[in-house]
Length: 275
Image 1 (cartoon, rainbow, N blue to C red):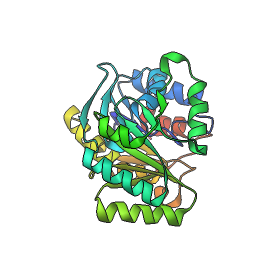
Image 2 (image 1 turned 90 degrees about the horizontal axis):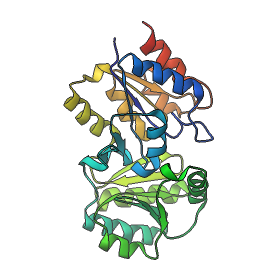
Image 3 (image 1 turned 90 degrees about the vertical axis):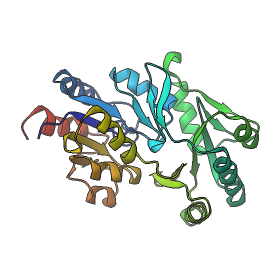
Image 4 (image 1 turned 30 degrees about the horizontal axis):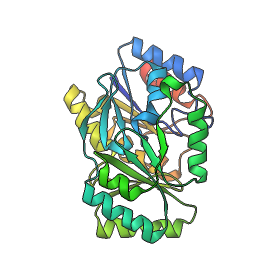
């Protein structure tokens, strides 16, 4: 099978534990693109937080962001297809956040908002501060999420986090039963909440149909639960070696970890050679 598109998750997949792209990965993806294979980022991140890697790779295709909430065109600087939270959904979701006392960040149209600090936020801010200003994401503290929800033009998603999985599961159950929103785990303690029907797989399926690319011509690589549908959709779904058993079980192939040259190996095996 000749693959025409490589769909890449970011955290835990394209990025190593230092949030960097390995040199072998850069080289191999560059060789694939030189052969006419397109490369696309498919991430749970806000487009401002995915941009440094899109820029580093010199990509051309838009990126699927916030677990499929929207497709972002960096060249035109605006979202293409999108399904953000409605204002009523955001209001109701914020009420549940308060009731369950769950740490949350809100992804506004052009920036990531937070009310208070948390260990997830500390890592995010440290990473952001390490970047050149030209690619540094906009991450802002707001006085009140309530005011943000009332005034925001667009809210892509809420990201909630917590070490108490039982409390997080109760939060998810409340959201699904009472609001009907999409809840996907993007980490062992991190939950992404978007408008119903949003997923990486659904947005990718929609986009490749526009490009005239068959699902069999897509090689997708990921490591978390929010990648599983995408791996099943692709003609070749690849799980990282650092992924959970459930993710590996739904994949066609398991490669090395994100701290090894796992992506370079799989692209060389299935894209640059005849298998």
